[in-house]
Amino acid sequence: MRKPFALAISFFAAVAWASLACASDAIIEGVKTQVNGADAVVSFAVRHAFSKDMEEAIKSGIPTSFTFRVELDRLNSIWFDEKEEDLRFRHTVKYDTLRDEYQV
Image (cartoon, rainbow, N blue to C red; front, side, top):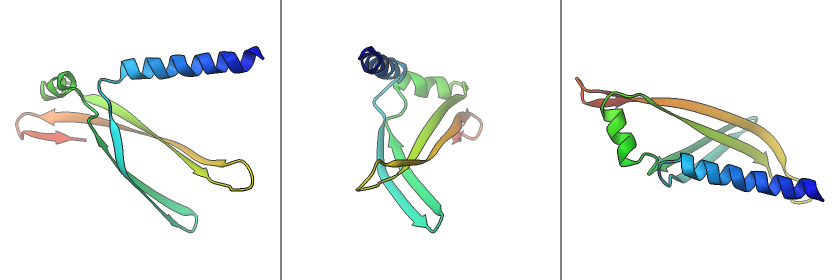
């Protein structure tokens, strides 16, 4: 009985910590998936990921990294869903002041 309660508390603590760690409310939109046999392609856009302070830090030359976590599940109507993949992608944003452009 205590284990589910402890799990729920740790879940809410993790969510609260994540919301404090994030500078803004990032929005994932335009999620598209395409499955070709055993291969799957997933694409999406992220909006409002950086606060003004983060943008200023990047423009001042501080590289900023962010990580996407993508979990792909096989949905089953009769039985439990199955986790197919759990992938993480790390990207770093740098600003080149001479060229006035961002590099990812």
